[in-house]
Length: 131
Image: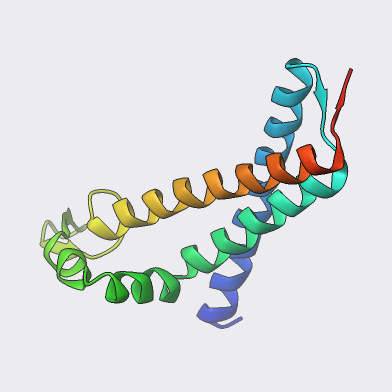
């Protein structure tokens, strides 16, 4: 298996498990509040969040958005220092402590809010039922 194929497989597993947990959480919270979400809005929100999550995590989309926003200098400037097995200090562009990681997390939070808005709008439009 090539590194690219392995990366795609890992990303797909991550997105599927993340989406499953988010969907279960949305169902649990709305049920606890006394609402039953129709399946179509819930699946639409899950699809929006899952697809955008996959695109963001693969990297080129985030890099393109940073370029459009004029923030590539921010990504290049804010690297993390890492200590390897030999005791050598290296810099890392990705992972915790980097601007790449902060931009990734901010974009994920924004997309999650957008997906929640899609679910709410579709649920209200289709007439969600109170238990």
